[in-house]
Length: 140
Image (cartoon, rainbow, N blue to C red):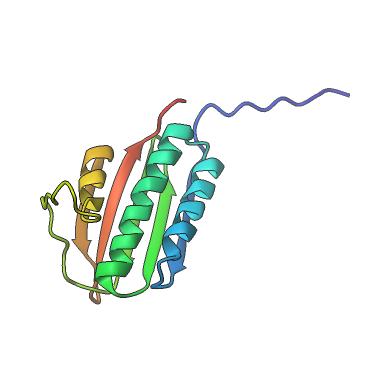
C-alpha cells in the first residue's frame, strides 16, 4: 500500500459571509469568523492576526456608528484576502480624522489605512455602505 502525500503550495480559495447582530459581542464573533476563514485558506499567521484586528475595528464601527446589523464578507482568491463589512447606514465614515492621543476611540480607520494593502468605502445599492480592505498573503 502506498502512502499518499499532499502538499499545498498555493492558498486555498475561500469565500464566506456572516450576518452579525448590532451588539458589542459581534466583534468577537467576527474575529473568530475571520480566523476560521484565514486558517481554511492557509493564509499565514501574520495575515490572520492583521485581518482579525481590522475586522474587529470595522465591525465595531458598523455597530457603533452604523446602528444596524453588519454583514461580514470574506474571500481569499489567490494571493490576497478581501474583507468587506456592510451596514444599513448610508452615511460614509469620516476619513482622515486624527483623534487626540488620550482619546479611547477613533483609530479604527487609521489602523485600516495603515495596515491594509488597499481599502475603501462604497455605497451599496438599497442604502448602506461597505467598508473593505485587502491584505496580501504573507508566507509565514
